[in-house]
Image (cartoon, rainbow, N blue to C red):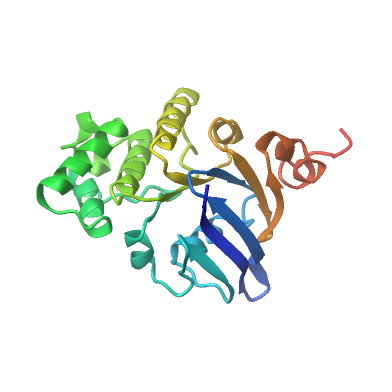
Length: 242
């Protein structure tokens, strides 16, 4: 697999608060990467740096062989990056289908019948076809999270970034969402997933990184990472000798 995304010594701070501390890591084409860490560790800031809503103060970011460090978020979306947000942000006064259509036309540049077909396909994939004509403000939390996913997919991404998409769901809802994400992997899309629901991550990802104070402190096979002493101390808040 070729390299799709690469961060090299990326730094960002707000005064004394460091949200990215010389981060250097990469993602292979087709890989699913999980990201964990305590609250305030800099995980969402990492997504903001990758997607272009936050600019690094130093370091470089490359995507599909292009240096995108100075590219705006819209341009990154058009070349194949899409994300969901921790708190779903649909257009509440628009229907589910209309929300998807905005993503298809503005993100993927699709028009006419192609845009409509793309939206219907993604709504079906995310289990939202029965809600296509429902206003987004009337959706349940699970349905709003599915809409976040569907809108991202309507931009036809090569890289999908998911920010705590399982948070707040019941066990059965989480299981259903995980299965949807596992199915997406069959399409070849690369995934970076921030999540506190660790069992959901472990069901999907190939690799796990741990972030603390903006620094990547561990990177490797999921089971090995979860068993490491440093992760037990920092992320799980456990005594390493237990």
